[in-house]
View 1 (cartoon, rainbow, N blue to C red):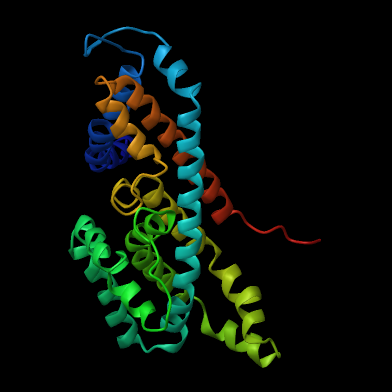
View 2 (cartoon, one colour):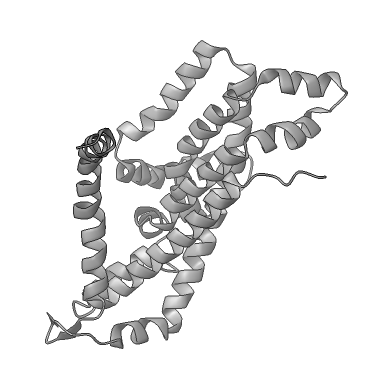
Length: 285
């Protein structure tokens, strides 16, 4: 056996665990979900078949597309808000804070993930309720009370609970790796702070920022807890639609259609974002 074949066998041995993992826990469930989307439900029992009735039923219904576009909008909005809110904090940690302070801040940002996301979401009930902490504070200045639970605002707050710490961490790591001499050179050449951010920091951080926004979007797009408990499912998102569909006559095949559409959307968004993140700028000739 040649040396080349030995090296290939050695490499395959180390790749085999991750290949098996992906086949068992990703490819297998996806194939099964695609298969059951063609099943039919008769007398509350799934029957093996190959019919497009579930796809036709879901994709021709207005409530599905209402949920689809609403989920796409609210997830994109929350990702954009998380990116904007995270930027000032990440900027300060990356360029103004010492190394020890930055490490401590990142550790503190990781701590919320030690607690269940469901528990953190329920804690917002105390804050956002009409007789809650936030309305009490606004009452001291003659404002409110405002209805914040069971609204779009409540949904966005829940999404930010999930995504904002992650956005700050990823943006901080991204900007901390920028060569500081480039920022100093821009300032020495008379570039104002906002112009420095726009012309130097953002172009150098493009890949990390796009990946961060992608993570925020994916987490929000697939989240069930925030729109259900804080948003009151006034306008059901796709995860809520999956739950409602499974409760309606055990329609797991129709729920599988919704899940597949979610996955296709996330794949499309992810591939587009990665292409934008790693696309090299055109060099003028």
